[in-house]
Image 1 (tube, rainbow, N blue to C red):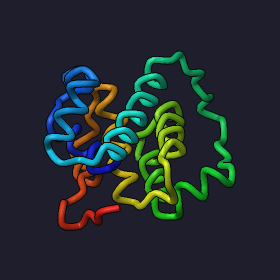
Image 2 (image 1 turned 90 degrees about the horizontal axis):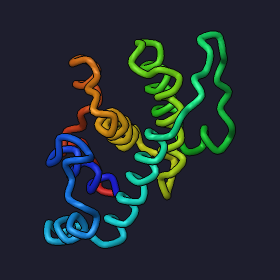
Image 3 (image 1 turned 45 degrees about the vertical axis):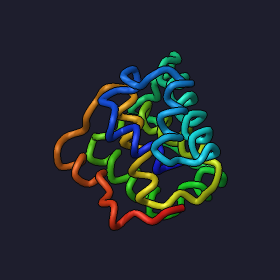
Image 4 (image 1 turned 120 degrees about the horizontal axis):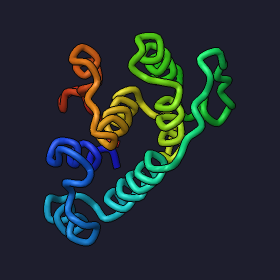
Length: 150
C-alpha cells in the first residue's frame, strides 16, 4: 500500500490530477503493483479525501490530546515521537493531527513504521495541496534505499 501511495505522490502534483479510479487502477497495475496493494491504497485515499472535505470541529488551543490504546498501538513510539515533534514545531495543527491519526488507524496493519508514517504525513499535506516548510519536508522524504518493502 505504501509503495502505491509514494508512487501517486511522486507522479501527481495533487490528488485531483490523478486519473479517474478505473483508469488509475489500470495504470497502477501496468506499472506492476498488485491489485490488493492498489485497492488498499485507493481505499485509504478515499477515506482521506472524505475526511479532508468534511467539516471538522477545531480543538481549542488549550485542549489536551489523550491517545487511546488502539492509537498508541498503531503509532508505535517512533511515529508518536515524530508526531509530537511536528506538533511542537507548529507544522501540525490539532485538526491536521486528527486527520493524520484517523489515517494511521485506517492502515490495515500496524504498528506503522516511522518511514511509512512519514509517507502518510506527506499524503495528508498532498491531499490538501499544501507543502510543509522546506526543513520539515526534508525530514519527511524517505530515501528508496532506506525504505523496506512491507
